[in-house]
Length: 235
Image (tube, rainbow, N blue to C red):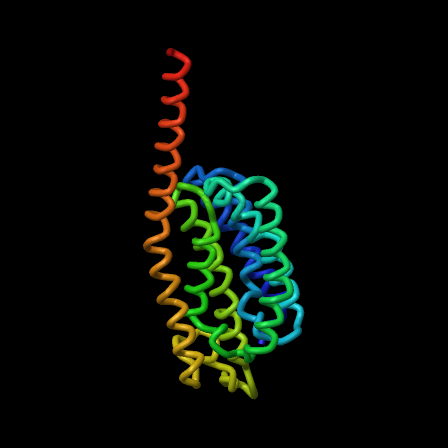
């Protein structure tokens, strides 16, 4: 199978192309393109978080623990949280992801299980969409797409490396078909994966409307406060 360096190199090249194309063809802001390219590059090692205590798990958890809280800062501000609260929540999320989630994945995942599947790629993309903040839903989908592309690139390489040339003919390894799959061999991982996918899909469909309503309520409240203040001054 493809090694860590091969996976990360391939997804990084794809990320660079993804970011460049968006910047050149669609005038997406440069910082957004750089972030999306980085997300694509790092997502190339996400399927291997099921590799117990391996390097992909350590690197992925360290990156997620640092980036996820930062991506949520704008959302926290729109929710009216103070700077101190944002710092405390960010620190808590860092510890939860870096150590709690990492330990959970280490104890309860099996290599080449459902983390190596197309539903898992969709779950990663939907999670990225929910974490990405901002009122422009298209930009959020753009960032989520970067994660899906990086994730699927890993699965694709695993399948390619499952085909080998042996004694003058192509031969399929036992690992062929264990990456680009919809279902695994055990029922509970399948049920668990598709339940998570269903819940995240529901949240992805509903969350933009919820946040828009919250933003509008905040604007209305600000306008009402300013109006009352102006009336008091005029009196």
